[in-house]
Image 1 (spheres, rainbow, N blue to C red):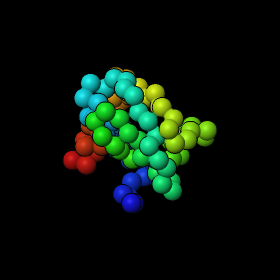
Image 2 (cartoon, rainbow, N blue to C red):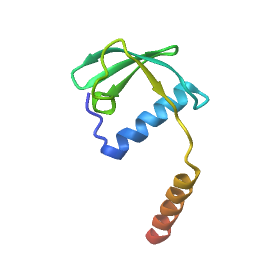
Image 3 (cartoon, helix red, strand yellow):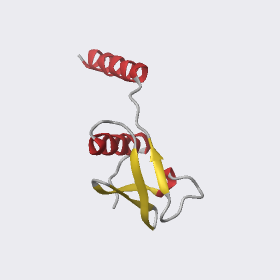
Image 4 (cartoon, one colour):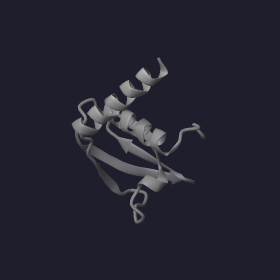
Length: 92
């Protein structure tokens, strides 16, 4: 399945899926259920999701448990918001 997202777009999509799927933005248990071509199917308590294989460690294989932690980066968030505000001002 091709979503037409660039490099940063796919990372944003994965972040959003994981963050909202976890609900709290913390850590949980994730298992590599299977690898289908360039996509890893990850199983967790809430179901399954797909992750590009290239984001996994090179030695990751089916059955491995992944440790995924999601943190908010306040400085990057602030910088991005400033950049977006600057772009909006430029368009006016």
